[in-house]
Amino acid sequence: MNSFIYFEVFILALFPIFLIVKEKGFKLYNPAILLSIIYFFEFGIPSLFMSLDPLKFWQFSFFSLQCLQRSVLFIILVFLLFVLGFYSPLYNRHIRALVLKLINKLPPVNDYTIEIKNLPMLLIFLFVLGWISRILLVKMGMYYHTEVGYNPIVQPTGFKQVATYVNIGSTFPLIGLSLCFVEWLKNQKKIYFLLLSILLLIPEIIYALPTGSKERILFPVAILIFLYSLKTKLAIVPILFSMLIFVLFVFPFVGIYRSIFLTGDAVLDLSRTFDIYWHQFRYFDKENVSKMFYMIFGERLNYSLVVSIIIENTPKIWDFKHGFTYLFFIISFIPRIIWPGKPSITSFDNVFGRDYGFLGRSDYTTSIDMTWVGEMFINFGWYGILVAFLYGIIFQTLYTYFLRQKRLSQLSAILYSFGLYYMVRGGEFAAQFSGLFKIYLVIFILMYPFLKRAEVK
Image (cartoon, rainbow, N blue to C red; front, side, top):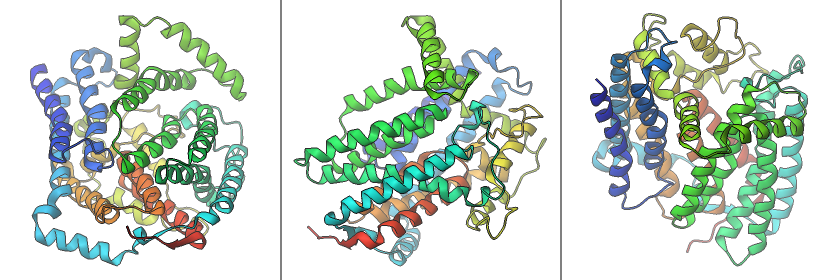
């Protein structure tokens, strides 16, 4: 049984190798390559952990190696159909015509860039409004990650109706950081833009650390890496160094931070977390490395377990949803001011977590991501792999829209980098793409007064 699972994981490892060879290089800005690497870390390595020591996962009484074997097969088929969908416009003229027709109906974002003389005013506007939004999130009890458990503030009635817009506003400083970084990439002699970018990155990390959310810590770093990869070839050493920092520090540090009792004093809580981290991992020996890797791939990034449990228990626990979860995408665009009782994706994920045994029956706050792979099975069972083909076409459409002219303006580089992050983060369809389109709309509205026609070179 284990040998077959090893073979399946080996196939998952071949996907990024195949795509890198096909694209003739490590093009991180290619969503298929990037997703294949993430896919292996979220599904491949955790499957190895579970096959090597299944006893650690027997708290889920329905977990077995047979169940894991079926789930990894489903995972492989999903990504295979995704890759076929992603490259289908290159080989099928009907799909290519459909994609190009859709692209031609979209505004030519590559034809516009930002007037440099307006940049200081735009940056001031973004940072002032952005940090006001962040202060509001803190004061309204929406700062800490749900799993942290520290949230003494009761949200005022009605704040939920505008919370989405305030949350988008909190990304404005990151947009400003991206603008500075792109200016440096355009002309690397302007070293002051690089220094400003470094200075602006520091408060982004400081703001993100106490939230207890790895994603908020990763977000600004990932955007800068994506922007850099669009301009020039990435050096492998900085990428490996960044990965080591996340594996050896960020993941275990955040895991400890979420597990301690928080006082609300960020300095005190972070210092206590660092003391525990140092006590546990100051010796870089086999036991600590094993403990650290289990914390990451056996627990935090173990989406293979989620998919295994979904496949084993659907439709035993839930009937197949037949596309119902994808309707959240349409619903998400209706403002809560118009529909105060609009169902939320997080409440749906909370019910999923309680019903499928990931959460306690009395936990009504934590949400569990069923993953985009699990969502396909929950809706259509094994036929859900066909949805992955549509995902591939959507990803190729966005990729072609921004990069088909082999040039990106300052504006389009930022839009694509944010889009790439949202595309590969791996949540349910509605959460991924409704968030992406909302932030696209906000960025475009904010920057429209500062735009000019880009010079074609």
